[in-house]
Image (tube, rainbow, N blue to C red):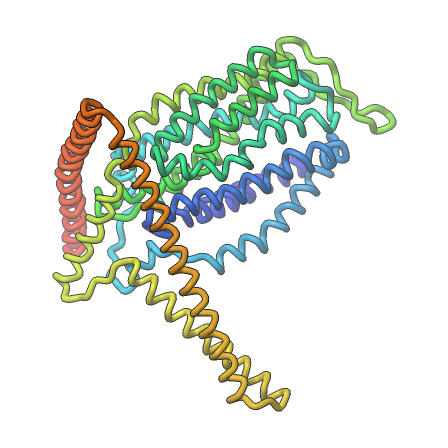
Length: 501
């Protein structure tokens, strides 16, 4: 009974801590900047660290070294979880102290009204894009969790032999190569065709890879090819999802006039944490009903794996390769309705315009986020310089050096660094401008070679596209203005009611 209570307490504490950490960590991308290009790049690099480091541990170290060592020994598993938790603590503190929430800082100094949690929930759950992104995440997490739960069983009983130390490594490493090399291609593709489209087309490949694996689930070569294709399809989802989610959060702010990042991220994390428990229960129930035989330990302490019946092998194969074929098809259909990127830049411009108008009504000077960020950076540089000079003075006093001479040397060195940075920035801007010019010239030359009929068709298509976009934006603007006024009126009514009470 004591062991059960200890494990339940551990799981509750771990789930709570993980949820809080995951929510704050994932919020850093949407709150870091409003620039959609920068935000997308940050999302990619954030996921690089997450996917590549966990990939190295899960794909190589864990199956080849750790699993054969710990086997089914419960105490060793508990020790491993404890060590990993202790390693995570200082890294979490490091992230806390060295991150910047630029979107939050836009409203520093402004008088903030407390928005009831119930109001934020209504805003979030009445927005179609938010509902789509939550359903998307729920379906994707459901399929991924089943695949992850089935991985070890699939490698042990269907594709390879129990804890052979190589099957899981091959599946994870060779199948996962695209997750490493794809980082150089995924963001340029997403910029060209859009984050939604890149993710949607990716899921077509994702489903195709799963189908290939299902054709011959016991054939290593076929499975590795299928996993390779599948993971190519999973690149956009893995690397740009948070950037797409950030666009949805900006859309909510534009539509309602209220930033609901915390509420939305809470729901996101509830889905993530709850589904792990639900899927684990469903997976274990499926194994139990199909007749799974657990490994045993002989008198010498060696783990003995039993031969599993065909019903168990079918259940494991469905969990690892079959479930995600279904979820990928559902996601392709669902993503067709996620058009948030279409007008997100126009919405961001309107957010700034509304803020500027509100500031002017109150007799305040409005500063755009870029100006605020630049001023903050300049202040931070001044503070850093003062600290360095204080440290230099202390060092000079201790060593008997001439402070004024050392100070002059320090200032000269800092100015040289700044000059080099400015020159580097200017060179990069020139290169980018020249590259863009070459690109436009090539496109123009290619266009000039086209026959008149083709040129006319392209022009008509572009005009239609622009006209459709303008009509879509006009419709959204009316709906957004009406909803903002509705939310504002509701909040004012609550304020009046509270004052009268």
